[in-house]
Amino acid sequence: MAYSLDPDTLRRGIASAAPRGMSTSTRDRARRLMLAWIDTAIAHRVGANDLARALRDGQAARQIAAARRAEIAADPPDAIRNAACAPGCAFCCVLTDEDGGTISTAEAQAVHAALVPMAGQRDGSDWMHRACPALDPETRLCRIYDDRPEICRSYISTDAAACEINAAGGSAPGGGVIGSHVDFLALLAVSRAAMTGLAQVPTFALRDVAAAALNGRDAKEALNAARHPPVMLDRVQSGAERGRTYSSGSSSSGEPTRTQRPPR
Ligand code: SF4
Ligand code: SF4
Image (cartoon, helix red, strand yellow):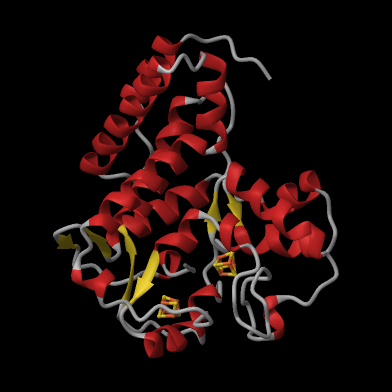
């Protein structure tokens, strides 16, 4: 689909984007990050339509968040240095929250494409109720590791026992997200606000995309079945802002929230 817009229109949309429920500081940071990304893309001769598609599908948000995550990993706070995370430790892959793991269009497409060749295989919920379908129920390893979404790359904990309690519906401390994930959600919300009237910027439940793929449903059906109501991104984004986050040199003091708690 072609959009009738020019880069300046897109830039103005970003500069004035005001998603519901987002703090001023998070909003201003997301605007700044997205405007810098657009300027870099334009310098690399990316056209207005491709820019708009990158905002719509969440590719821009994903690229910015990945760069931020790499920065934090290069100078990690204590919580990352002391994380208890290890292969086969998968309590964070139990998706108990109402959002089922919030992912963008690009992420949903990647999850579907990676899982659909495994259609008919056993589901992660054979290991534990509400575990991500992409989890191997025997090894407890992610079967789509290279294609796992941003939330799966961001959640960490210093206490695996607390994660087990949370997977069973509790709310034990110890976990949180790398700061890049708060940016990712804010960038999706800013993209949505900037694209109003041009295109929708949907989000999806990771759990439902993965289940549909393993049931052999095609990508269009899977994404339709897994699409969130618009208000879900607002809820998850503001929950993440209030929750515990880890960035280089600092950690916020919030407790991990239910909508923040999904996988790594
Ligand atoms: S977040 Fe918790 S459950 Fe997940 S790998 Fe780390 S310690 Fe294990
Ligand atoms: S996609 Fe994410 S939640 Fe699902 S198994 Fe892989 S790491 Fe866990």
